[in-house]
Amino acid sequence: MEKISVIIPVYNAESTVKIALDSVKNQTYGAFEIIVINDGSTDGSESMILNYIKENPTLNILYIKQENGGVSSARNAGLRAASAPYIALLDADDEWLPQKTARQMEVFMKNPLVDLLGTARNGNKILWPYFVKEDRLAAVTFRKLLIRNELQPSTVIFRRKIPVNTGYFDDNQRYAEDMNYWLRASEKSSLYILENSLIVAGGGKRSFGVSGLSSNLWAMHRGFVKNLNEMFQTKRINFFEYKMLLLLYKLKLFFLLLRKKLSA
Image 1 (cartoon, rainbow, N blue to C red):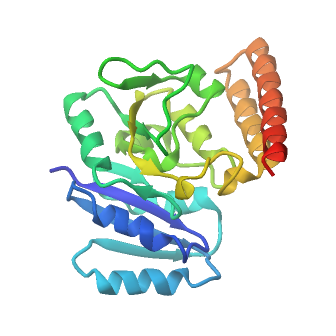
Image 2: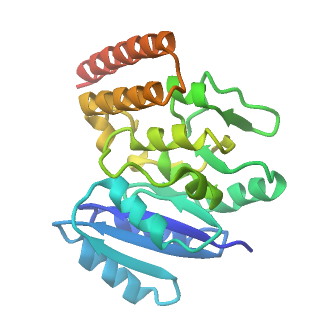
């Protein structure tokens, strides 16, 4: 059974981090290295984590404490410490369903060309521009990612070749940082998503525009534009694509701001 390094960044998550950790402990798959990165929390997260480690001595948990540097910095600390051939991401306010990793590892074993695999979340379907095949897999390509990022970080498991080929998250990017990483990873690796809903994200609430970092819609928009500028500067998209996608992002922002106002 291949081991998985699970990277859990924690910032002021004392009310949810135990649920996240329990969801790893309760997996039907049984080979984990759990890396918890306390990213400068100012609440009771540290005592919660240390108590959890003490109460679960059989779990392989590595605790790392650092000054607040943002989620990218915390994930990078986890990537540097990870030793397993597979790496999974889990945010401290999300929860894996018990069969999540077993189902994904089954796909990896059957499909050696799959380098990264995400899943659906919160009971959602996989939407256009992704097309699900009979095996319930949909290819995640560079240009599809630019239109819609379906790879929520807590759903993702990837082979070690991803950070070897792609490097680390952008330490200075706190919004749409996951999309930036997937865009860069797509250049040399094969990315897929599985249409099984295997995590509960943000307590089951609509994640984008409501909970977590994505609730700051203007900051998320700036993150998307930063990614777009980077892809244009590295010549992965042309000027026409750049302008059309910039318009698309502005329209998305307007729609999300309107939806947020109407649901307030």
